[in-house]
Amino acid sequence: MRIGTTALAAALAFGSCFTIGPALASDYNPAGVYVGAAVGQSNVRNNGYYSNDYYGFDNRDTSWQLTLGVRPIPVVGVEYDYMNFGSPNDTYGSFYNRGGSSTRANAVFGVGYLPLPLPFLDIYGKAGVARLQAHTMLYGAGTPFDLDYSNTDFAYGAGTQFKFGNFAVRAEYDRIRDTNGDPDMLSVGVNFIF
Image (cartoon, rainbow, N blue to C red; front, side):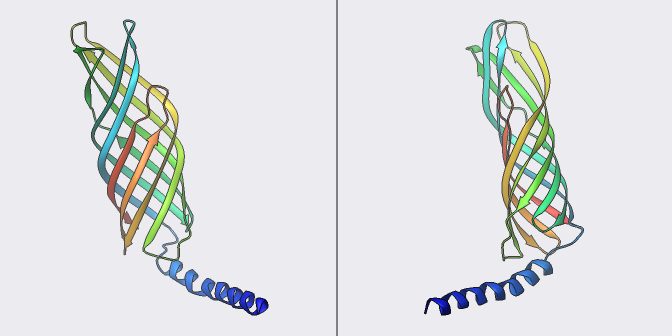
């Protein structure tokens, strides 16, 4: 009885290779080049010291992203993203002190896709490096102050996409690890696959 159950399980697993493989191949473009755009909401965290006073922002704003990627094999891809996290304003220290931070990044990611038997659905994770650029403006009771900084940081994200022919609709989360605060973005976008 045990041998029969094992043989049946092996036969089903072997047979599924012939059904899953063509399903993946039928929706897979070998070149796998795509471009896309997305819009969403960011959470910008930016903190430090100015004139011995601590300032810290943790505020949301509208964000957007442009994407260029290539997927040479079904489970692996490479992606370049330009991310604009917006320019949220917030108070710091006392009520009279205000500031804002304009944050953007250029990032390169390795993308890994789960090998799902559904050709219209992708679930993926991504990890890479980002060149984060932030312009912080502090103003209020004291002298206005501008601070620009750039850091190269670890970046990561995850998402899902539904494919409709040459188009894909994506929902994605991205985050950059930075010593001055970790900006992140939750977005929805559309990719065009060549």
